[in-house]
Length: 265
Image (tube, rainbow, N blue to C red; front, side, top):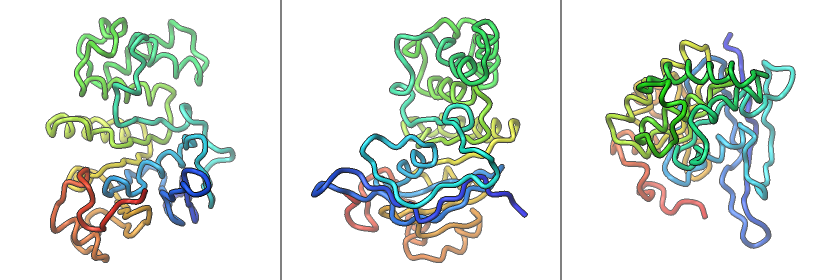
């Protein structure tokens, strides 16, 4: 029997106060199985990133959460950064422009693994090799602006796994990249989670990209989980009209919604 790493039950998330409230998730039930690669798919505004932040404990101040997120296979809740690595959509925003690459990757190992600077920098060098950054020794002393967008995302992945998390969340980690680099990043993520025995939650609007490597997919529409299942089952035998439309039309889901009307506020 597959072990449940994370169990989401009746999860609703609302932003704003009083008359300005907007509900981003509506009573979502979802299990993340240990060791799997689960793709969360949906149009912009469907609640994908809100789900990722809720699971990682990174919801912004002012967000109101109802329901429950539990961790059946753990005795204590996971610590963001140590047990859960998070790769954000825009590495330009997530990487600090005034700190060297070595400092930023090493910080996770120092804070969560108790490494000294020398050992942490050695770890950073090893991670740069793993994510295939050219001239990694030189890269340690370089700054984010000296790298391409694809290289910055590889560096962000290295920083996210510096503390050896068992669970990696990639939130639209490829959407700002061209198609060739997208495929490279997905291949890298797939390789890293397999080699390190991690669970991957992959948030994307690109159905085709997810279909190539995800074990299961979950499809969101306007904050509702409308379909889930094994990737090939959902792709070839979708049960909902919304999923059938996504697959039949192969829409660019980053554009304004075309199937379900207006997105939530």
